[in-house]
Length: 274
Image (cartoon, rainbow, N blue to C red; front, side, top):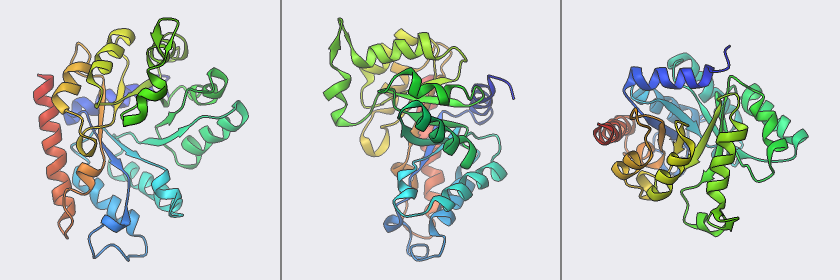
């Protein structure tokens, strides 16, 4: 593997699928169609149908680990990632676990993401500093997605605090770009719900890729997010939608509805890019 493995794979699938769409695989069995709600491996079966319906329309999948761990369904998470490997091997998997702990523990979390689950990228929290991030960054062929300006309503509570004339999220963005990204494997999480901050972080970090949550159920404006955050080449964004795609339909044809929602999002993103 080369040191640009994740970045190269991501760029290739973005071009091949003409897509910046990431589908968040955040299963909520209570929202599944009735024929799946009591199936023995309902989460895996649901995910498999979503992957089958969207594999040619996306640039990434992003399972959120809490949705599996809370239900004791880690095996179904592993099986989902393995299925993506078989069904859509060109599409990378971002494990959304937001890990952040002291170095020795961080090394175990990195092993969990890349060894146990075989993810291509993982989200991490920068709060503990470089020694907590380093065990992840050492996986030079993997993507390390660092929380920067998150999409939730409470993000301003700490991320907007001023430190030495800059806001904390600005410091995180610049520091990751200048000091943590020596191997070229860092991305930043920047929410679509804050387009002004998206534009600000883009100006501070150049061509770095952003994972952008917050469209769909959280209310982020797709066109504004794309225009605020894309690179000069019209790329640099992995735009995630979870609930808006997974639960676009609630009947037996839920996967058809998910495909339609994914295609609509891809179309809206590409219209804004161009």
